[in-house]
Length: 153
Image (tube, rainbow, N blue to C red; front, side, top):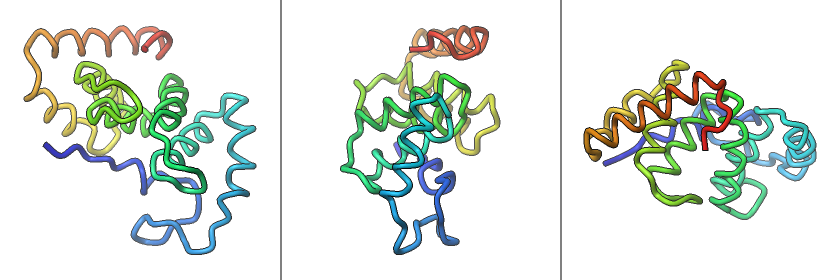
């Protein structure tokens, strides 16, 4: 099964060309100097961007555990692209232990925010799950939403 990872290229906040790829000559060291302090202050967009950088190895060594950490921080602030990418990490078991219930939950939250591709991923992963797992994931998503994304992990 293929899981869409739409958030990586299309929601990157740095310079991109029409394909979503970064421009040649982007100074990632400067990007890091901007994003790190903002992320440490709780800025969800900066946290998401650091997640992307670690996820794909832009300006830093590729590190899925760090990517998951930054995505999680942004996701628990309601950042839909971070929720989407974190769902993908749970689906693939990259940086986190593979967990379809958590993947479904994060895709469901991103879908609820209208994030493109999230509902498709949620529905695709459901085909790999039992009815009990789906019900558990749906309850986790409802609880997470009700708590304004606090305590979702």
